Structure formats: structure tokens, C-alpha cells
Length: 128
Image (cartoon, rainbow, N blue to C red; front, side, top):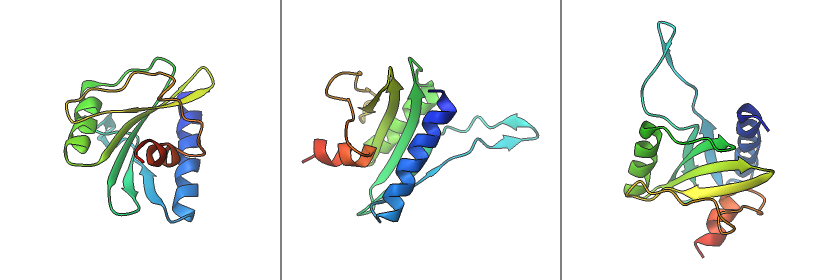
């Protein structure tokens, strides 16, 4: 699966969550200034889950790694009480790797494997 296909899959998950009134998460486009991509820190998706908690999601396929600015953005979201995740698609499996308030990201493992319907189902199950 390509990165664009993976982002499309996540957008479809987000749409199902929106229709179910569980979350409102939108794709953040890259902004351009005079044809040059902005260097503002950003991740692929941001929004809210039911109850008002912010969520920030960076989509990665294969062995893609976070940019320093992306890690810092996710770290800040986590520090401020939000949900900060790197949602990975690797070898046909979905993995949710949380980023904590120190910037540490969970490593891909059997614990991060998402076999739930959506990323939010996984988050809710893991925080019960």
C-alpha cells in the first residue's frame, strides 16, 4: 500500500467515526507559500474525539520515520493531554504507536497491532 492509499484508508476510518458521532478528525493539507511547501510543523490528521480530547495522527507506511518537527508536534499534543499517534501500515498490518509527553514513540510490536475496526476502537480498548 502506498502512503497516499494509507492516508485514504485513514480518512475513511475518520469518516465512519464522524458519522457515528465518535470523533471529528480531518486531513491537514500541506500549505504552500509562493509555490514552496510551508515548514510549519504538521501531522496528517488532527481533530477531536467525543468528550473534547484532541487527537493528532501521523500516517506512515513501511519503515517511514518521523521528522523532528512531527515528533515535536506529537509530543506537545501528548504533553497537553491529547492523543498523539503514529498510525503505521507495515506488511499488511496496522499498528498504532503512541507518542508520549517526552517524545518517545512506542515501537511496533504485537501490542501495537490494531485488529479493531478503527484506530479509536483500539485507543478505547487499550485505555480501559
